[in-house]
Structures are given as structure tokens and as C-alpha cells.
Image: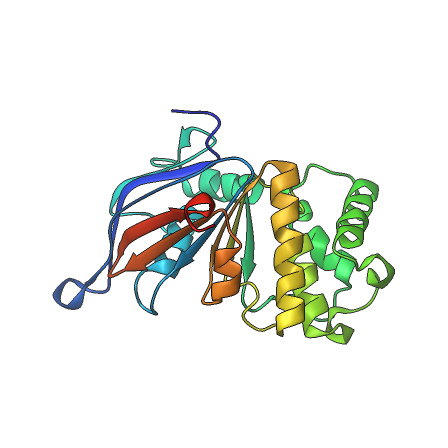
Length: 235
């Protein structure tokens, strides 16, 4: 496998539900995310976008097919090993930021670092502070999350997703609850961090403006990717 591929999946199949009423949610999906690339997955509700994101994020397993991160296949790993790889290699951003309301912005960003357990308290504080500076919230690092605006909370969630310097960032409608200005600002920030850090970003979005600004758009329908468009073919 090419070690320059951040994340890939091949012929992924996934069934959901009980045997008598199960749904064929993913039907042979293959994707490849290169370093420094930003990908959008678009399509109608129920087409399999979130199911794909959960499988790529090692939160669920495919019934058939394979997922690889940094050229290593993720199949046949123990639950503990999958959890470790997930925490090391993947950053998640969701439509709802899921911050701890009584924790400060800085404490929220430190949560993944505490889970990984590689840095001292001083190092975690320094890294969290630097990430909050990067998202424009350095002066609010000690403010409880409940006292931040919606846009600020989502920027904290972006900083948190980068806490362990992941190779891959997966985002499910990351700007869905933001107004236009904050949506564009948050996406531009993510895109720049991905390009500069040679990471890979895959986001599910219903926002056509954000999709068009990605390096690739992948159209999903009925559990399949029916078309993929690079930016060069849309310019």
C-alpha cells in the first residue's frame, strides 16, 4: 500500500438492522484520501454518508471490505487497539460540538490528550493554548464553554479535534449550526490547517458552497459513491 495515502477504504459494505428488516447501507464504497486534501461527501439523507464516516473513524466495522490508515489495515485489531488508533490518528468534529459545559475551552481541548496520556500537564496546557490561539480564541482559553457563543464553541471543537495531531479529520456537518459568516470562517480555518499540516479532511455537508470549496466532491446515493469530482474539473 502507498504510505502517502492518509486513509483509504476498499469495497466497503455495511448492513444495518435485524436480519428480516436489514438495510444495505453501504454497497461497495471505495475512497482514497491523500495528504493535504479536503474531501466533501454529499447526497440525500439516508444515503449512507454518516455510516461511512463512522466506519472510516473506526467507530463501526464494515461487513465486507477494508479500511486502512497510514497504509495499515484496521481489520482484526482488538477493541483496545482500535480505540488507541482512533485516539492517535483521527480527529472528529460533529454538528453539535459536544463540549463539557463547565470545563474551560482549554480543558475541553485537553481531553483527547489526557486520554492518550503522552504529555505532561504543562505540555498539554501549552498545546491546548496554542491550538486555541490558532482558532482565534487564545484570549478566551479559561472561559467556561457555556459562556462562549455557538461559533466560538465550534472553534473549540475544531481545536479539540487537532489536539493529538491526527493524520485524518472526519467531520459530520461541522458547520451545520453556524451562520454563514461563522460557517465560512470555520471551514477556511480547517482547510488551511489540513493543507499546511499535510492532514486529510473528509466532511459530510449539505452546504453547496463548502462542498465546492473542497479539493474533491464525492456524490453518494443509495449506499454508493456514484461520482467523484476533483476541483480542477469544476473550475
